[in-house]
Image 1: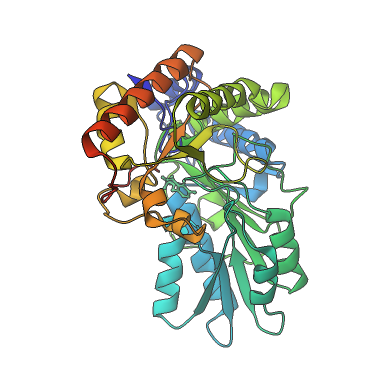
Image 2: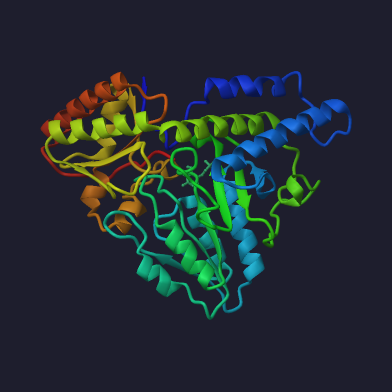
Length: 393
Ligand SMILES: Cc1ncc(COP(=O)(O)O)c(C=O)c1O
């Protein structure tokens, strides 16, 4: 099997598994327990917090562990909504957010908040001028814009958007789930108020995430109870997964500091060159300049992505056509629609996402499989693009 769907989820790094195991067995204690074994476990949680903080240039106290990226997004959006209040306020987000931001925004709308969605250009980047018009300094409000898109990998002008929101006195959150661990993210350079992280996107286990909350800002917890995580997220800590998240953060920081995960980018570029050079009618999607280094997002003329995915799966190559959380939906991706793509182009695109575990041999074998799948589909279909089943994360 050739796994090329790392934006959906990643393999847990063997060193992460190793770091976690003792906390599932010997060190099973509750970090809130007062005896020495409990304190030992607490220390491990705090060491993980330091590592996650170091990955994004935060202070350890500014990190709260959560149950997943979706939870991080929900808890911060709900808090901001409560802090800002419904009266005369405005919420601005982008048209290309993940459902873990889109759905909470819809829930806010349902109770009377005004939510505006800023568009993107054909490269998949936020239209900063439009964003500046939507952010209304005369009203209370907050904004949420993702750091890197999960389908295209395109990175957003976060520094500009954050500056506009701050200038208006608004709160600013970013869903950085597809950026953290893959590209440099530093909250000292980009002064966002809140930032969401998910472990399983960078070789930690599923079911653990984190939220960066800048020191001194008001926050209304979603989960109240025993007061863990400084009262920001009650519930007994998922210790083993938190330790795993800390280890993965350390490993990703090493990779970024060493060479910015250069090998992943090299393989991605090689993949793209071969696709464009060897297959007719391939178009690469999204900004070439502003993007995470691990995604190939391409449209294949006269090919349904749904058909390609089936043929690739049969050939042992796993990739996707959009976002996993939309599995089964017969509609073109909202991200590509926002980029102004035709339904046909949107329905004929694949998202191939690499990781630090992807090898050159796998890339070459996958290109061959794509070439064959495209040829087969074009020969049997003779054109025409039908509905697509969208998969992927
Ligand atoms: C951009 C983005 N936000 C949020 C999420 C949700 O993260 P999690 O799966 O940890 O809930 C994902 C993952 O699919 C994502 O890609």
